[in-house]
Length: 371
Ligand SMILES: C[S@@+](CC[C@H](N)C(=O)[O-])C[C@H]1O[C@@H](n2cnc3c(N)ncnc32)[C@H](O)[C@@H]1O
Image (cartoon, rainbow, N blue to C red; front, side, top):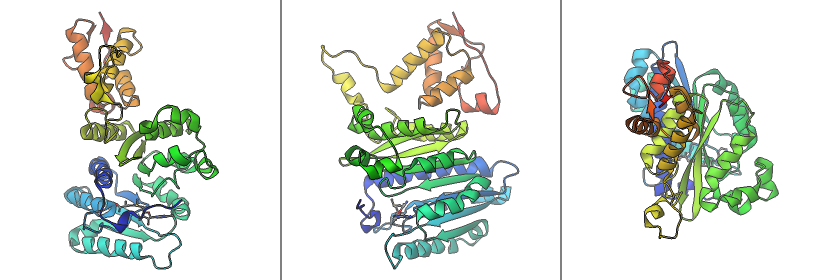
């Protein structure tokens, strides 16, 4: 399948949006590990690095990563932590690997311009086909706290085998880019089914706009039953195409961070750069349409039902449910406060304690009582 070369012209708005999400995640991920005692190295992998900058000088993922590492330089020194950055770029079927040379030149230049940063960061360059490189680097991904970017063109490397390998690693968070609408068009073909065996009839029943969410959901079902790996989609519309990021991590802190980024970027749905659920139409419906709730309101309604039915009885159960539904703790908190105000639920504190710090860090577990 022919793919457009992302670096043949300046990045478009959607590509920049995607890179900003990658960047936001690195911004939050780096201090999470750097500030922990006993961690002396963190490893970051960008398997499809591109050239460093686009044609107009806009930074690509490797330079954005370097800038984020640079922002945390003070903490790297204070905590005595080294960063190892793995950058790979490979143009299949090309003798001259021009993009790889550009990548190396731009990142070396960046690092050479900051001598003290250079003592804290080492870059390992690779010019290999992802398919060969991934198994070679897996031991390193497994060994250290790792952040992995898989910013492929298209869908070629969206395969169960990669998810299943990443699934086995506890301390790795990954952001996987997928051109999901290719599945809509070609997903029934043998080539696609070999990579990812998806029931396209079922997938299409969810509608074109939701194809990225649907693919993420299908991959979730391919994970082992007791898997701790959580996957979350963020859909990106670019013209008529639907692309997206699949975020994966096992730790609730990572999930909390990613969901926070998504909801900050889109306060209506938290998982797309467009109105994926047609929420704009909610206020415009005619008298004859059945009433419909927004994504946030229907989540709050669901929380209310589960609390009143006593299916959810503690802040931990509520937080886990909130994450599993792809929501942020604020939505759950607002709901609990409203229930308390209405006299339907009580708890012993002013706040319902439904956030990462209380539940997972301080382990302050409280119960909710139905009145
Ligand atoms: C979507 S772009 C990555 C963009 C990059 N993150 C940036 O910000 O500039 C995908 C890159 O993967 C490279 N690529 C294509 N096939 C590859 C393969 N089999 N292995 C590794 N890299 C590949 C392409 O040359 C292209 O630069």
